[in-house]
Length: 206
Image (tube, rainbow, N blue to C red):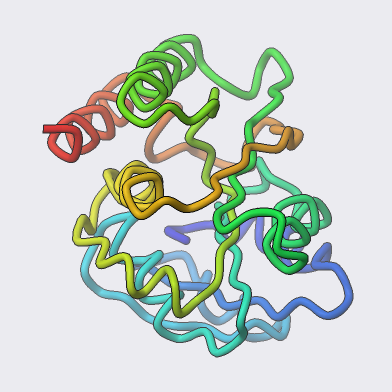
């Protein structure tokens, strides 16, 4: 999370029974860390800015067999985590990726188009049938660590999928609802943020 004080109560209040929330604070200045802790989350501080840096910090802090990732901005509902986690827990997938089904106002056109192009390139290179590189996903902790994902910016989710495909993992996409985020977007809500993410992912593809 980065300055998600407004979204935290709703997000952390909707975790399914049996799930433990680990929130990685990536430099918030709005009190997000204190709010998350007060709501029962394990808070991990990651001062190095970057989506991948935050995801890796959370992965390193987890100790459960199956781990999930998701944004903390209210665009994804934690109640939907079993959609990805159960595929891994039951052995039907090694990596489950939530393919976003967005309401019209949730996903700006520029971000939607950029994601479509990247997903098409992933399908071409790997043979996977993914139509989205969504941020809600699940896998086994030890296996994810063994993948050796090196990107610490916005290329992290793409590199995870590419390395998983190269390793012969069963990668399955499953539809998940995607809603307008709470508060100001730092990435896909702006053209500049989307271009930054595309730049990082293009570097991973290269």
